[in-house]
Length: 427
Image (cartoon, rainbow, N blue to C red; front, side, top):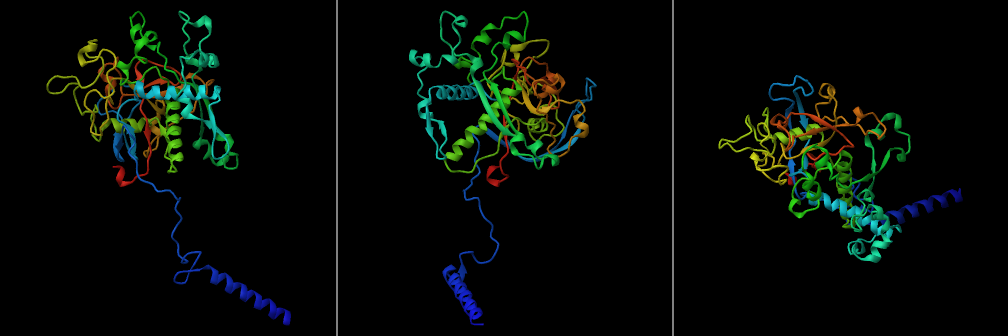
């Protein structure tokens, strides 16, 4: 009995000690006030405005032809669609912007070879970008150390030591949410859904010659990507796979900066879906054939409103023989330039003739990560907008075309989108 009383006294004493130590302020304990208040992630967040991008607000539109389907292909039937808001590049990605990607990959490979690394807080080795940016590419000693990146002697012209474009390879690692979300994959390890890809990312400059037989386009092949005069022109000669790699790098580049600044990371940059692209191209105008409205390709003064192939081939009539600046002509009502003409644009969507018949009416998307050994039909990606070499029909908001994901063309470029939280300050 005395033992039981002693134990009870000890428990009561311990309880008093704990409660007295935990008191804070007016009867509150270290556990709070006993009410539900939630737990923040601990990082202050303010809605950023991505440079060079414009906000496309959520809305509803009729996706598909606004006029008769003159080809009677029935690959784009009219359907009401609702789209969530997103940010989109105001212009197509330019040569200068893509060159930043190429230089980053080049410098990261060179820094790895030269062992320009430093220790990160978690103990791993990371590239020392302060040193990487100071690499003297014309230094014979550096060139000797980086011989693995330079063309072999038998491939040099006049003995010039130039970088081998095929060696500029970007390594990406992304998580496949669609596969990971399948019920049958719920208990499988995360590593099963990490996609690792190595992509040569230098643009194919020879497309200017390859795309047009018996046509003198060598000056464009030599200068379009390398000359400063074309810096603000849309990049071309980039495959769907390269455009996807650029989007993944852009995400990594931004989030690495945000993490170093102890700020909240953002969503992924990506290619727009086919539905997002058409919704953005319409600029909030329903049932109109072109981004500026229409129904004509000229304004009331007779001026052409986009860069395409007027008439039977009067290429310079619209102000540009090949491509023009990415910010040429008037933007649509969302502030987006050249959603018709200049260069056609990759989307993330798989091209399937009957896709409109079974897609959801909320943010529709049909996607397929085709492998290199898959049949060509599985590699078709939707291309939108028409280009400088296309006739006016392909400039229509609803006009669909496709190209294979591993091909490059002198008339196809791209622009990115990013999903950010729907905060009022972002509108």
